[in-house]
Structure formats: structure tokens, C-alpha cells
Image (cartoon, rainbow, N blue to C red; front, top):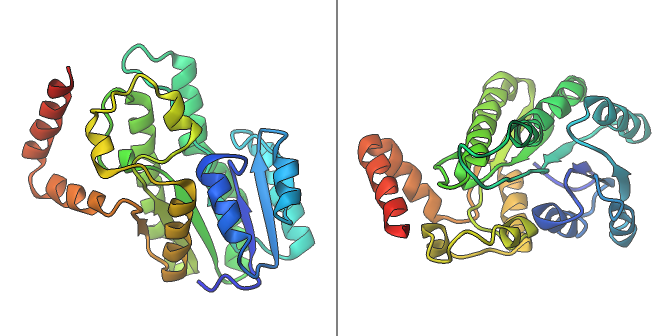
Length: 256
């Protein structure tokens, strides 16, 4: 997709990968840039990057629908929607039902709410782009983060289904699946050992991830992998599922 003169929305835009996407998209010759976040900081960020800021809870479909409708009425279309907001709570079977629900709502249903209120408009406009920030955890897995890994797996399946159903209607789908990124989410995960296998492939900055994202959108690639090693891990997983599970289990045991 050519980015020039496009109307772009980014959710979770006040920090992390979302802010990285803001900085990168702001360098393009867009028609408009719209930033969603639950933090009031979104307004100062929007001003700084010549964008429009909205305090939006992406788990509230009514709020999402109202703002999407307003943007389309003002600008005529939303050409690229970056469904980036995410949430992680570390833990396994000890994760509360409330935390499970929060991860499910943000990591999965927020994409459904946006698509439900956007895809028909994209079809009317003969095309659009929907980028979902997921994680390599959705393609592989992540020990010690049961709810996060599970909901991110669900998001991959959702995106695949979107692509299957809507590609012929002109809607392109991409999933952005980095490993570790230098964000608040990583810094708050202070109980993850720096000997964890995830650290082997390095930590990318949000700006580096955003650069990969825009390249993927321009190329219309479904799978965007800022950490290129992830492709090898996916191939290993699909080539010998049993061996992959045993290898992953052994990594976990070696951490203890």
C-alpha cells in the first residue's frame, strides 16, 4: 500500500510500539493521523506530531464506533487502522478471572470491535489496511505468561480469518509479531530472568519495530517479523511439533 495521502488510526498510541508507530507515520505525507489511548497524555502527543488525539477505551465498542464514525465523516475514510493496544499480566493458573477477561478484551476483542465498525466502510471505499500488533508469543508461546500467550494465539487466528474472508474485498491484513521490545510492558516484567531464552535474540526499540511495520504495510505482507529469527522458530515448530514442545519444555526446566 502507498502511504501518501492516507488517513491513519493508531490505538495504544501514547507509549511503546504505538508511540513508535506515531513517530514513524508522522514522517509520511499523510492526509490525517488519529491517535487513540486511554491516557490523557494522548492529547499532548497528538499536538506534538500534528495528529488528532482521542481518549478511547478500545474495549468499549460504543466508544470505538463513535470515534471511527466521526473520523470517517470528517476525512471520508480510514485507510490504515493500526490495532496496536495490548495488555500483559504475567502468571499461569494463578491469573485471576478479571485479568483473563482484561487480556481477552484488549488482546482479542478490541480488534473485533474495530473491524465490526470499519470493514464495511473499507469495502465501500474499495480497500483498506488493518494492522494488528500481536507478538511472537502468538506464533510460538511464552512460558510464565499463560493468559498473554493464549490471547495472542487467538489474535493470530482472528487475523488469519480476517485475511481469508476480506482479502478478496480489498482489505489487507498484517500481523506485527516482535519478540522483546523496549517498552513499559517489558520493564514491568521484572520477574523475567535475563537468562530467559527470549533475550537471546535481543531487544528492539519501538522505533525499529515501527520501521518494520511500515515496510510490511508497503509490501502488504501478512506476517511482519521484526526479529527475523522468529521465522526459523516457526519453521522448527511446524516441521516437528513434538520435538519443538520438548525443546521449549527443556528451556523452561533449564531456567529453574
